[in-house]
Amino acid sequence: MFYASSLSQNSSLEYLVSYLQSRYGIAMCKQSLDERFSEKAVYFVKSVFSQLIVEQFSRVLYCEEFLSEFNHVRIKDSTKFNVPSNLAAHYRGCGGSGSVAGISIQYEFDLKTGQFLDLTITEAVRNDQQDAKETAEKVGKDDLVIRDLGYFSITVLQQIRKQKAFFLSKLLAAVSVYDENNVEMDFKKLHAFMTKNGIENCEKSVFIGKDRVPVRLVIGLVPSEVYQERVRRKEKEDRKKGRQMTDKTRFLLHFNLFITNVETSKLPSEKIMPLYRFRWQVELMFKNWKSVFSIHALQKMKEHRYITMLYTRLILIIVNLQIIHQVQSTLSKQGIRDEILSYKKTLQTLKNSFSDILNILRCEQDKAIQLSEDIYRILSKNHWRERRKKRENYVENICLFICLSDK
Image 1 (tube, rainbow, N blue to C red):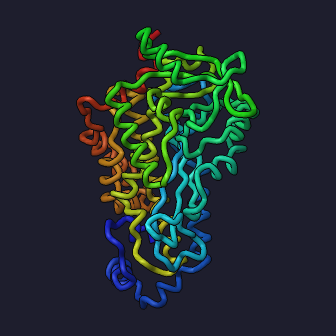
Image 2: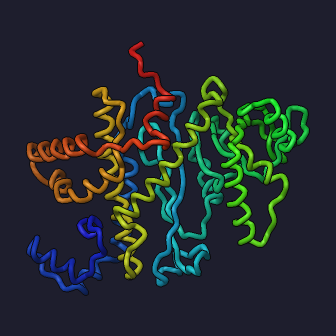
Image 3: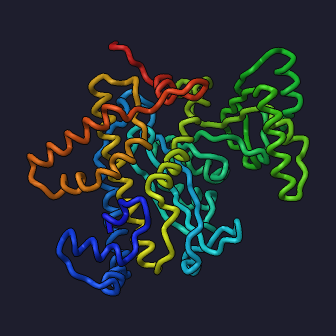
């Protein structure tokens, strides 16, 4: 299973039985192999997967000072993809593109350590807001939760507050905002005031929703070209759905609006947007999982085999990411803080080094140490994330939140 999951292409049963014969001298017909992909096999890989989530070995991805005010910085997102129609009974599609079967993967990680906090496979019809409500109790004291608008729920925000935790989110356009005098904010007037007085950014203490939840509202005006592009995208989206954009929404597009319950001393307003940008790391991660491990492109096969193969690929991804985080942490402790490993490059190399990683687990200690050192040298030599002009720099964003002095 693990060997097949390490391959770029899908593997037929014929290929796998030939591999077993040539590599290990195990003679087996393809029917017998197919029968091994049973309910017990699914239970086994799910158990391994769950245990791996619990017993992760990485501790610090970058440095101890990074976002030290919080216990965990929980960043979560999901990816959905169509699966073969024979899985529709257990994995219903979300209706897009006429799909009848689909899977959603909910992935949450701790930005401070790189550790997996949640990795759940569900049917595609289960949306992000439902996930937020069903997993709210997992948020612990002093955790910071960062998610996109798909997870937005005032009920969940209240639950996070009740658990003495924190949130950072964009403001949903449909949510009403009230000032300290309980008067609903007029964003048209706010835009006119900020434009007239040359104010690009400001912050207000406000209340949101019918329950008047108290939050910090961090407000930033966007450039006119950004506003025009937002209007074009929104109008196109509304035409597809047969609706018309409201004046309120049109004026809201002038702003970047963030809400949080973190006090200013822990999270100044100028750090709100750089911190929220880290959320994009999840989407980049999903992109790499698909391009390197093809989690979305498994061929049609029976349910037990499909789910076994999918979980096995996720297990390999977790193991490889743990290796990457450990190498990054080691480099950071050596004082190499101005470079970050590229997930795409390192995942591809580790995927191609599957046999070496397997040997580390199987061979004697001296040989395992040698293989581990070889992998470390390869990753630390030419697997750095590229610096691109006019693009967000991941390292520079991190450096906004840490102190690099010796004091």
